[in-house]
Amino acid sequence: MRTILPCIITILTVFAFSGCRQDDVSPIRNVRFDPKLLNPLKAAGGCTNYNYYAGSKLRNLGTIHTGSVVVAFDDNLTEAQRDQALTKYGFITGILSQRASQTGLIYTLGLANGLSCAQASQAILELKKDNAIRYAGPVFNVDGSQSIGLSNELLVKTEVGGEAALKAFATQQNAKVIGPLGADTYLMTLDKNSKGNAIELSNALKSIKGIAQATPDFILTK
Image (tube, rainbow, N blue to C red):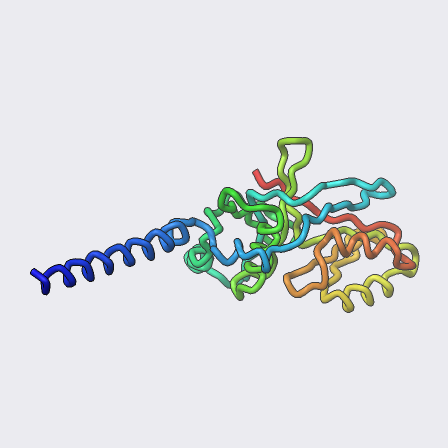
């Protein structure tokens, strides 16, 4: 009996310890989105409030929508390869819609519930690291119900002789200029290697001599 009791106690202790370890692991295992996005060191800081100019009028978009993001895939991917590329991201719920921009298709991806705007921003950064994705950007809610995604394009109108200034700026920002599309009107296209998104670059262009107007392009996400 003296020999049996220590064995029983030892076995019960092992099971109790194992049970505690399982309780610690289960919440992480059952989380649907990438636990790395929950790391406060990776998704720290406040939420950016976005504004852009439509002509001379300043428009406020607020902070980014936490339920979706937009991406453009590598043009050489098949549909199967595109779908496979998304399976590695636990924070992506699937493709919600697709829309054609001037230079390709933009896809709206659903995000898992419960993300903050800082975590949604981190999700965009994680997607930009993927070789299968050439662009990733935010979505905004406007007028309370309509969601719009920030595309990888902006329209720019130059003053007379301003084309050189536009092309020099594009080179500095790792962007491309297409056009002219009409009278002194150009399309600037971006990708994940550009030094800013369409809102940031359009706002920066406002202070460039020779640029009359720059407006970011948005797509409907539903």
